[in-house]
Amino acid sequence: MSAPGAPVPPRRITPLATPTYAPVGSGFPLAEPALVALVRAALEEDRAFDDVTTISTVVSTRHARAALVARTPGTLAGIPLALAAFRLLDTHVEIRVDAEDGTRVARGDTVLHLSGPARGLLSAERVALNFVQRLSGVATLTARYVAAVQGARTVIVDTRKTTPGWRDLEKYAVRCGGGRNHRRDLSDAVLIKDNHIAACDGDVAVAVARARSHVPAGLLIQVECDTVAQVRAAVAAGADALLLDNMGPALLRECVQVAKGHCWTEASGGVTLETVRAIAEAGVDRISIGALTHSAPALDLALDFE
Image 1 (tube, rainbow, N blue to C red):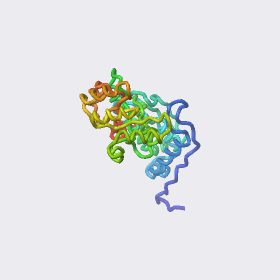
Image 2 (tube, rainbow, N blue to C red):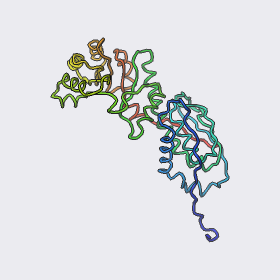
Image 3 (cartoon, rainbow, N blue to C red):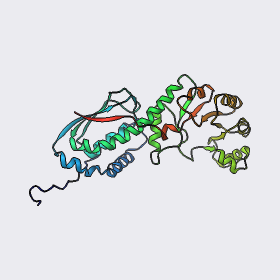
Image 4 (spheres, rainbow, N blue to C red):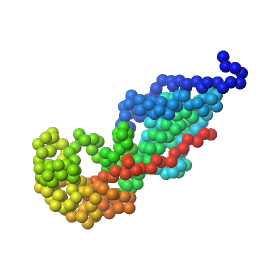
């Protein structure tokens, strides 16, 4: 027994049973076991079940009410992960969802209402916010690009420039923002880039022919092109699609005309919110933007206790 007045060693918070988090048919990319494993690992990384500050200052019977609130406008993604963070820590936490993934929120809008054991709310707060702020940032930036090309026939797509281990989540966040996904991984499609062409002695036709002879029928073959000459070579070689790299609107328009009726076109490289409209108006079918996932700022969300 501890001497009177001695510090009481913190006791580990014991998580309870696991409920369901993502609505069926929501398009959320993780099956429930994977979702739970990811969030539990994040809680363990943060030592959320051994939160010495909360355990030593907040009595176990204390209940609280809180709201997850948008500090800035944006588009939401990752709400199932936030729900899992709170409920894995304590399933006595009750949550009312006011805004689902894909919802546009204004400054001051409430996303979640939470009530239950104060310890659970406090200890899960950071992990819940980390998930939803990051993914909502991706969705919000994507929505801005989609809005910038509204009315054009061009589709905004992502790239493989994703956080390791988070690819499916970040590509899901792109969809929440109204964008679409490029190939998920290296087995999804053939994308012959400049280094592949260099390894084929600079011969686009050879690279396309080798790809066509090795991959299953129907698998997309796309060629990255820097010049009109490469575009002509790729079209002649029977490429299904072209990746037009770092081209201005005038050059893009010329390449689109060369490719018309033969293959579809995608612009990429150095795309910004200031330039994306002009690129879309050049007539390309898609614009791929790595910044959607590698440079999206987190959406400012906060948990406010009542």
